[in-house]
Length: 205
Image (tube, rainbow, N blue to C red; front, top):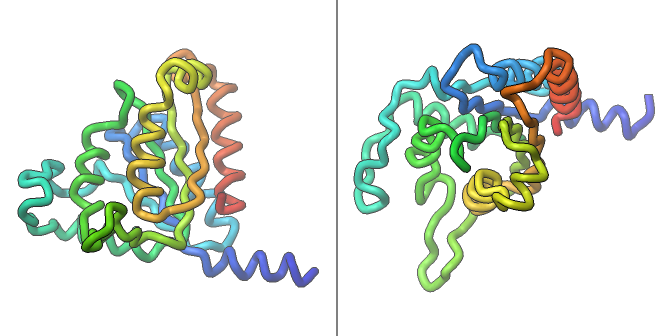
């Protein structure tokens, strides 16, 4: 075995991968995609965790904004620990109404907080990024063709989450798998993407 290949396998074995599924439906294609990535990542010998937001017990409403901190539920505290411990974050979710599911938005509102994922610095307009050193993969499904999302919609969901959340907090690079259209997709189409996502998991990309 070459030195480079040996080092690559060693790095993968030590890598902490966290898959976060933001779809509220257990039987969704998103769940199948998350499972496919998990399967591939396990074959790479990385340490892999799958977090289904729908299974968490928490109030998604950031009741007081940043004015007053509300106690975090145990499931959110555990989720924050997993995000902090991960080297690579994989977010799986659908695009709904130019954004993402309310449950996922609530999860982000309640966990991506000042002092946890970023922090304000006196006299500076740009907050301190507390998630530096982490990488991410966004796997987003949609019924909108990729070209239409990019040219006419200006990729609102991706801009909001990739730039406005992950990179804002220091996660970089953030790579994207845009899978569409889903509503009219064939079984062959879905199998092809499940295979692609599994391969990404094997390579921890």
